[in-house]
Image (cartoon, rainbow, N blue to C red; front, side, top):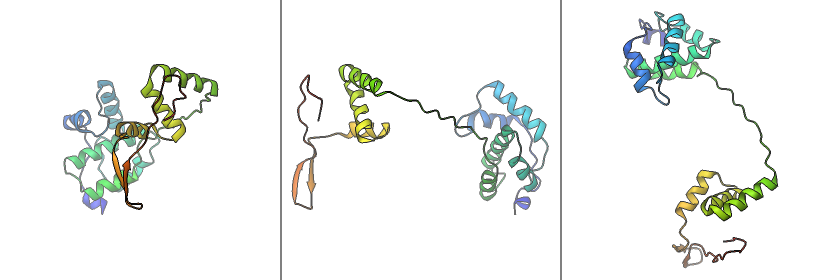
Length: 185
């Protein structure tokens, strides 16, 4: 099906494709002249004038240079944007040709309990909101985005109904905090 659907499409670098890279491409647009030059050089060396066929798709998918796969995927997005290939072909190519892989380099960083205690003490004295966020994350196991949501939506005086026991009550009861207290709420 693919070879029939895209029969006759030749890959050619054009000002229109370059404008697509700079202005229409999803996620990070290609904004620097240096990057456009790099893309153009790879395109001219490996893709210029080639016909879009199933064989080319598989060749690009296995290409050892990740930039070739990346540029090819951008060109396929451009063809789809220009309605030169149908959605089925677009989806198949994007599935077959992997994007350029990025090596994840995760390094554990040991934080001593002493450093954590100093940080919490500093925040408690100088940045109450940050202290609250850190405590929510540390003691509640929350992600930062969830801790922020809890703080943003916190309404202790809101009345809620508990249908199972048939009462309405304040959502939360907060003990008042005085300077020098342990800071529990």
